[in-house]
Amino acid sequence: MPIPELEKSIIKGVIQKDKVVIDGIELDGTWNSFMIERTQTGYDPSVWDEIANTLEGVTISACWQCGTCTSGCTMREYDPKYGPRRFIDLARKGDKQGLIELQNSIWRCVSCQKCTHRCPKGVLVEEVVHAIHNYLLRHGLVSTDPGTVFDELFFETVMNNGGRISELMLGAASVKKGMVKMGLKDLITMTGPLLRSGLFKELMKPSKVKNWEKIREVIEEAMKEEVRPE
Ligand code: SF4
Ligand code: SF4
Image (cartoon, rainbow, N blue to C red; front, side, top):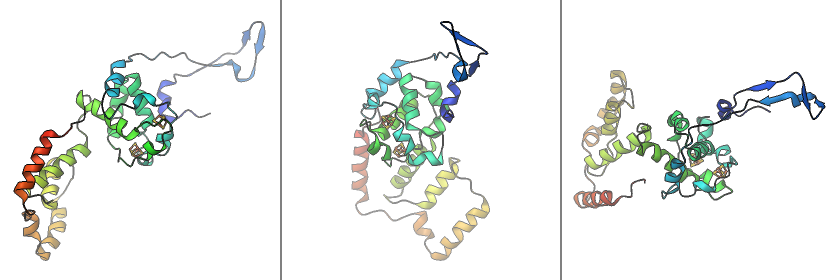
């Protein structure tokens, strides 16, 4: 049976003996093959404990590793390294290094909830994946992912533009952060039609939404009370 790609790293190899005799009986066929004994070290039970004690991660303990979540996951086809079952397995073992190695995958969840609807054990898989990712961020084990950086830029742009999104400002901020590469040619291609349409002024300085100052106060107040991922 082929070994699943993600498990290959923990299967160390197979010993093939010429002859195997047990209780005076010589075995034949494939009974002479043995997997090399493996011992996994570096378990850290505090990782599981900490994640299970957060609002998002509380259902992590119910997982029985069936893999239903991973087999139907939207991101799986796009990124073969993305696997909720695997993330949960590593988190429960406290295998931080294993999770760090998957840091370019773990943030990619699109919150479609297919995994959560399909889980036979009632694990809130999408939330648990975020709880694992938040654990890594909280402990400074991984750097801020591009998704979070973009969310922050988006919010900042809306707040700085009277409650409206400015594609131009957001684009410029994304270029500045190195998230988008844009040359002079791209800039001309993009701004040409905008100039011709007469919308350039509006894009540079969008008009504020009605009662913006009040709305701004409400948003700022709400942000102070926001429940940050534990
Ligand atoms: S579907 Fe549920 S029980 Fe199965 S591996 Fe995923 S989280 Fe665990
Ligand atoms: S919510 Fe995230 S983990 Fe679950 S199926 Fe969708 S992309 Fe995959």
